[in-house]
Length: 253
Image 1 (cartoon, rainbow, N blue to C red):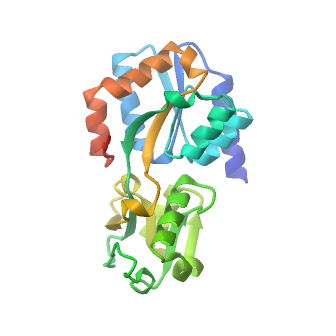
Image 2 (image 1 turned 120 degrees about the vertical axis):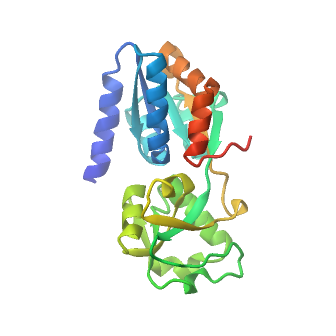
């Protein structure tokens, strides 16, 4: 509860004290490292423009935006959140532009050797003994993808009692690193941020909705010339594209 309240306050504060030349960007946590580096590149070229990122699960962030918060740019993998914001006239759906894609992967500690198969015939529940760490299955974008994949492959019912849901990806990675969970499910880009976990397999793309990141100017952002400039920089800079690919994102469109 305190964490959620803290996020709410953070979002409200960011919106309430927007100054000239500032750009507020709300983005999925899996973009933390990549977007931080993109902002550094941008501000080297445009030193008078300040970009402030806020990272939280897209589903949670969209709900907060509908209640009180405002942003100039919203980067999300969750189409339902974009639709909800569009219905509330906080974003224009047609302004959503494809940025990059990600993959859903199974991870374990670097000290563990656990097999993984992509077929429905593979008995995932039998290849490890401990818990399975996931995101919040019903309230987070990562969790929704996870539930879709486990259900599609027919693994969910056998694993349900062993699932340990985590409030954020940092705690998920830590739980796998520290042995609380033998296996975890996360985005490939997040798995690559830790040297203490390794990927043991990629979930079939057909087992879940596409993990595509879209960047959307909000109705506030459309009026902010610095926000439109930052969005244009993201899509036109070769360095940004190379940086995103280096962090494990893929461009399939």
